[in-house]
Each structure stands twice: as C-alpha cells, then as structure tokens.
Image 1 (tube, rainbow, N blue to C red):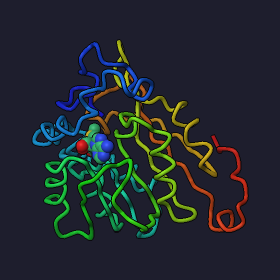
Image 2: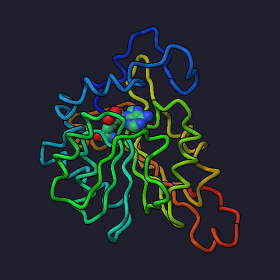
Image 3: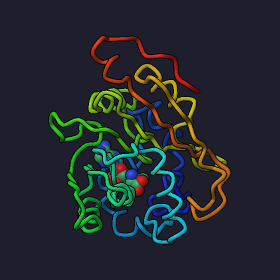
Image 4: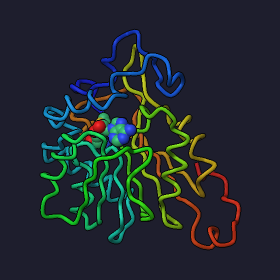
Length: 243
Ligand SMILES: C[S@@+](CC[C@H](N)C(=O)[O-])C[C@H]1O[C@@H](n2cnc3c(N)ncnc32)[C@H](O)[C@@H]1O
C-alpha cells in the first residue's frame, strides 16, 4: 500500500489507535467506515500499487500473483477487492473471480474494470462474504484484514470458505516509519497458524517496482495452505507451519 495514497491509512488523525484490532471499539480509524472508501473510490487508482496503470508495476503484481494463486484455472474470492485491480489480474490469468467490497462505488469501478471477464462483483462485508455455500480454491485479500475489527474471526470464516487444500493469500504490512500501523507478519502468522497446514511469508519490501518507489517499512504476502482433502475427511491434525 502506498504511503502517499489518498486512502493512506498512515494519514489517520493522530488520536486514532496505531492498531485498530488491538482496541476495536475505541476511536475507530476513518478507514474502518464505509463512507471513507466511498469517498476514496474516485481517486483510489491514482496510486501506482492501486491502479496498476504503469505496465512495470502491473507486471510485477501479475508475476507475484501467478506464484501465489493455484496454477490451473481456479475459483478465487477477492475480499475487499476495491476497484478490482488484483481481481482483474487474476481473471486475466484464467481464474474465475468473485470480488466483494462494502463500497458500492468501489464495486462499480471493479465491474467496469472486469467487464468481459468471468467475474462476479458483489457489494458486501468481507468478514461475512455473501457467497452462500460456495467454496473457493483461494481467498485473496490485500490491505483489508488489518482494518477489520476481528481479524481472527474473519480468518476463521475465510478458511471455512475454502475447498480442501485451498489457500489464503493475504497481502498486508505495517506501514509508515514514525508511527507505523497495520498488521506485522509475525502477528498474522500466529493468527493463521491454527488454521493452516503450511504457511509461507514473502517479503515485498525489496521489490520497489511493486510500489512504484523504494519502501523500507514492512510489506509482505502470507500464503497459507489449508489441510487437503484427506485431512479434511479424516480430521488429521495440521502439521506445524513451514516457516
Ligand atoms: C486499501 S483498499 C484495498 C483494495 C484492494 N484490495 C486492493 O488491494 O487494491 C481497502 C478496501 O477494503 C474495503 N473494505 C474495508 N472494510 C471492508 C469490509 N468490512 N467489507 C468489505 N470491504 C471492506 C474498502 O471499501 C476498500 O475498497
């Protein structure tokens, strides 16, 4: 997430808590409210890592996504999909994408962006996605989990939406230097570990092309593989995270 963004969470009022999950009911961040993102939708894509308009930035995210998502055509659920930039990359890679965002304006932009692709874009809550009994091969979430009021509950819900052997692809960070905010990789690993058969954390700091600039704060992708069909059937205990 660019720290220059209009929707930049690090530009919160100084009275707001550094970590919204730590004190969810006190003084919530402006980014916790739907109105914030409705207002941000029009200019959201202006940031290099949001709109992916620069071919080099776009190619860098496409290359990462190819390694994070299943290799064959898969059912991908993009939660808090915003204007649909990653959803579009996934669709272009042959996946069947469902995107969910609470902001109708974000979803309107995502629908325009994904027109002509096999994709469904829905207005709804990422914590309780309106997908009924459908199951997915991957749940993709970029820069959303850190601001949800109960990250652990959301992760349990998302794990339940995965088919056996499915994966969570979580792109998060702890942005800013002086007063960082977000979700550190170690904390997210602890939250995901009870759900996963294996976890891989990939730093995204050393690749400035992703962000359109050099960054030095914490940015990463966490890919969590869920237990496969055998474990799901037998109730086998997941192995420890693979580091
Ligand atoms: C920082 S943007 C990220 C957008 C997109 N994932 C991306 O990486 O380009 C956060 C998005 O999450 C959405 N969002 C925040 N809380 C949400 C919730 N509880 N349910 C659904 N969407 C939510 C906002 O409307 C916004 O579009």
